[in-house]
Image: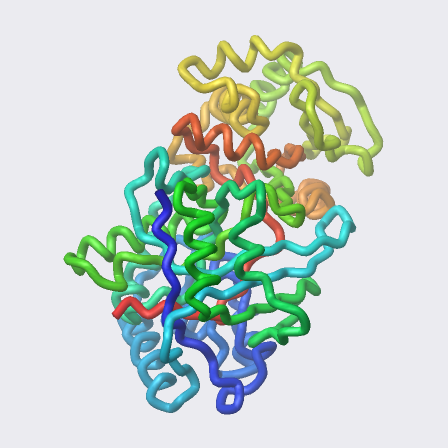
Length: 432
């Protein structure tokens, strides 16, 4: 059962700090050193100064968020800056707890305009399990160490996780939706053109109605697994009861029409002639191929046999189709039916682990494996020689995410790309 609570949020006082457009940032794990510098040029009070202290002269954040050089001084500086901003009135804490209605108007990578609706709340940190909170992807160790150091230094939840729940009647959103011409408390457009809006909801009846709608809900983490697991570790370190037992989350209904998932494509490097030949033999064995124009390389989403786009340094674009589902079933014994039909799971079993003999450590540490969220980017990286080969994926349906999680399983990393991302800096959840 989900324990959903309002929060006394810390927020930017824009009369002191300036406009939200200069203060908010994308999630920390998609920010490069150049992007961080650009954000801080907008404002020295940009949230990235707190949320990403290691992209500085003292240290750096490595690929996929692992800490290459943990610098204690960087975390201490983040904690000191956080305290100073509160003392100077840059950040102010609400006097009373509230829930926060949230919308994101966006145009997806498919060119379709949508609006995703959800709300911000504190959710109680629970062990993963049925009826409580479930993960949907495997995690890496590095980012958790970085986030734990930062949480210790700031004693705050600086950025929200993204969690899904079932609400076919949209009862939670209906309870919190802005009324009439009610103006948002905050509004900002991000670099992708997504317009983010939040409304403060403090009325007891509306809060209780939203809580009741989620009383029996199971939460599925869509984005933020590392932060959730880090927060649980931190809560156990502190011990006892208190605000540290909760994490900031944006909750969105699985049935929300604005909820979309896009693919994350796979890129391979370090393919010696021997390894490439092993890969091609496995493809020939299990995947009949068809040469296609490169603009048609990304397979269409939908039901039916697994399809993958494939391109390597030789330059011939191929559309691969799994010969028979029984091949995947045999390669994934003990897995649920939902997992055996998962494109990323089958690719991993047959080609990454099978043909290329990648280990858990190779996949976790990105040894010979990389990701791209744009098909044109993936193709360009192969054609430029920066990567040896690419597999272009179909989007994982939301129903598959739910079914794999319900079976108690976790997908391979980067099986989903929920778009748009949540902004960091709209709300902060103090843990004291």
